[in-house]
Image 1 (tube, rainbow, N blue to C red):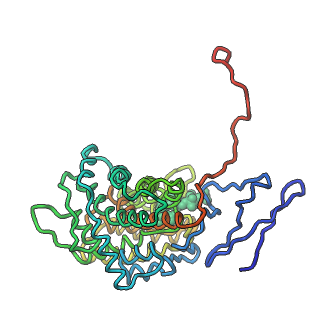
Image 2 (tube, helix red, strand yellow):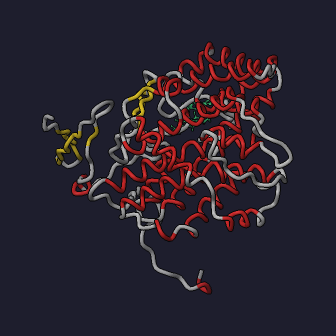
Image 3 (tube, protein in one colour):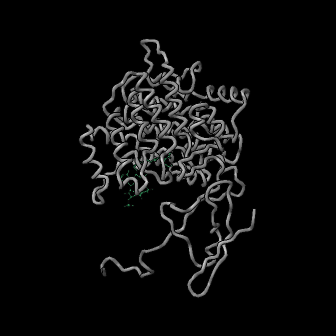
Length: 428
Ligand code: SDX
């Protein structure tokens, strides 16, 4: 590629030339790693225009509403692939052939159980503890059980940790739910699919046989696909930053879970459903639309807007179709969906939302589907974390696979006191 450069003019008639790095798609970047020699750093809180790394896993074109995983469009993957097929793609870079797929599925199935001691961690929680609090704590505690695969510089250890996390997250997620409703934990069943096994661990009870509904099984698998990865979002960037110190993958994923919990991020699906319930009926929508526009009101329309998408979130489109399929199959007539559809219609026609390019995002419809399936609102972000685990791990592995990666350590613009001398407390 051509040897492109950017020239920065600085005060005092100084200037500096900076190399431009070109990617395979999307924005090229100005490499500022040597900028410090000029006496300046860049300033970009929130990373609005700053790339933190090179990555080949996922590409988003926010203007066009395009999402590619290793080059494959999300709407094709959501319809034609399945979650474990996508996990292999994200982790290894290509879709598996039949032999590779079967071996990967077998490997994941052989790691679905957790150490029996892990169950005792739950006893320390109140029954009404938020499932995300339990998920974060128990996932971090996995690092106390797998001393045999904590050498992050050993590729085989990284691969084993990836299998363990992809395999065990559904088991732990379901344990969080079972504990919160006072039912016994259900062991994984390797005769079921990844989504089917999750449904069984969530809803089976010892007193009767559990039958997986294939429509719900497909809907759950599609929800996992749509949430699997999304470039350098807040939780993925958290996992990369934590992992850059060389700490073990289990606590890195726990840090990703912590970041995802926020209502501006993965917590939006739970917040969106709570918002729909607060709106309650179609005739109250205008009141909430006005509140969302009011600069003095912290209220925002949960499930709308996105840092990157300034067009429809392609995942929301697929989720919307799945939402109607599930509600039709379950013969659910959910008034919240009526509120959601009317809110979407009004918001998409409103000048404020049009001018700020605020469209429904992935969280807008996922909550309605999960509620229809019988998953409680408090478990919505747990579902998101379960699905995103493979994305977090893929980025963690990619970072460690890159030769010469360094610990991440941002700089700052210091605005505090300049140097001053200490004064004894009796003289202050
Ligand atoms: C996810 O990064 C990812 O990829 C995340 C994610 C993933 O898969 O990992 O896609 C998952 O987190 C989706 C987003 C879920 N969050 C929500 O639905 C919460 C509601 N949305 C907002 O909080 C907001 O849109 C964000 C946080 C998603 C994005 O915020 P930005 O990019 O920092 O934009 P901003 O807050 O500066 O908003 C720009 C303008 C502001 O008005 P002005 O200051 O320009 O006048 O748009 C307004 C905002 O007030 N705005 C909204 C709004 N979102 C933005 N106004 C009303 N309702 C909203 N939802």
